[in-house]
Length: 67
Image 1 (cartoon, rainbow, N blue to C red):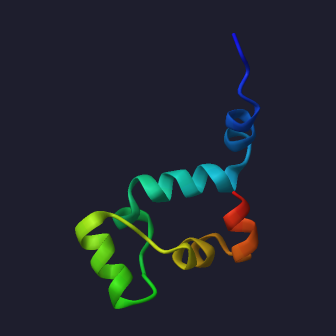
Image 2 (cartoon, rainbow, N blue to C red):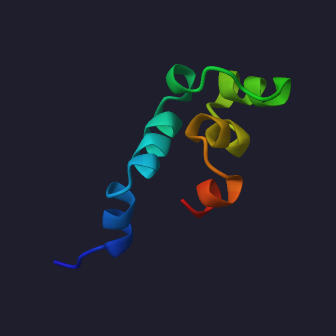
């Protein structure tokens, strides 16, 4: 069995797990979106903006992007 180090790295980090949970169900976890366009995308396609994840996580965008 091949060990996938990236998978374990992801699962070992609480913020990464939180982000996965938020992306799975953004309507439940992202309470305020940053603009009307993002709200439209969220309502119709389920997408959210990295800025919303940054705000919710309380980390820098560069950190979130590396996750």
